[in-house]
Amino acid sequence: MGVPAARIVFDESDREAVAEAVTEILATGALTLGPWTERFEQAFAAEHGASHAVAVASGTAALEIVLRTVGVRDRDVVVPAVTFYATAGAIVHAGGRPVLADVDPATLALSPETLEAALTPDTAAVVLVHIGGLITPDVDALRAICDRRGVPLVEDAAHAHGSSFAGRAAGTFGLAGAFSFYPTKVTTSGEGGMILTESAELRDEARIYRDQGKGSFTTNHHVRFGASWRLSELNAAVGTVHLRRLKEFVETRRRVARQYDAALAGLDGVRPVTEPAGVRSNYYKYVALLPPGVDRAAFKRAMAEDHGVRLSGEVYDLPLHLQPVLADHRRGPLPVAEDVCARQICLPVHSDMTDDETDEVIRAVTAVHRRVTG
Ligand SMILES: *Cc1c(COP(=O)(O)O)cnc(C)c1O
Image (tube, rainbow, N blue to C red; front, side, top):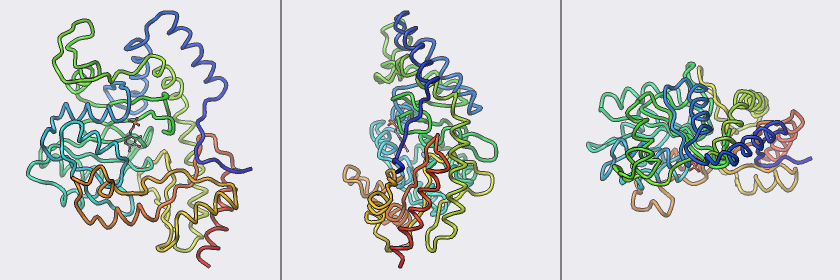
């Protein structure tokens, strides 16, 4: 009984496959930038219908490398206020100025209106974030605005492994997509990240940046200010093995989400973030907004203490313009971002979730909702 906030799923056969790969890697001594990195890149690109993939040390490194290649130093980069700190952190580390934009309450993503409101004469790039794994159906309109301005669109697809819109996968809508394999993400390599792109030039730049800016693997000529952004072969093996489960994980997560959709439709004032037509989320998170005025902390406490159901962290509980470290970039108010961050909860979704667990979450959320809304 009880449902945890998160569960990382490597079944016995996957653990054996990783152990075998680790043995091979240690025996050969090819510990970095070897065959497993290449295998991981090829499999991840194929899974998303992308031409090129470059594996890196983290999702943040993936974003920073793309932004460094674009060239954002001392220029503006539009970023939604509803995202993880790292999206803005990567912009600042690449030398750019984050311009925080409000979001669409239906998708928690940039909309054409919020993007237009944040563009400046000095915008160098726009970063779109697929919160919870949901790709906004406005993605083509956002791309068109960027194209008109001659500004590249970059996807922070850390949440969106295997998500799609109109049959196209996350990471393929703009110049590049940045993915994270942090342990909680839909597939993981322990730590790691990936860049997807159609641009052979960006792929080549990314390979230089990830290896200390070296012009080639075997020389010591440094042509870019890169860093230690390589993925180890050990991590690449873990990621390659986990990626084989992506389709099955997404199916399971989507089945859970359909059950939550049906249950939450009956709860007054609760508004789940649902999929618009053509959108296929991986349900990294199942996000729902509580009615205005409900104490989220008390709601979560009641779920945990009275029902043993632990909710995961929000995406996110504080918009970026209110993060202390981004005070210099504060602009606002950004009313939708503030509202959706204050009222959202994330129901647990696991890649191996059972119907019994899903039912337990539904019973708990129904009971706590009845109590708090009287
Ligand atoms: C996890 C995450 C990142 C950062 O990924 P790391 O691999 O931890 O560097 C960036 N953006 C978003 C939206 C994320 O959720």
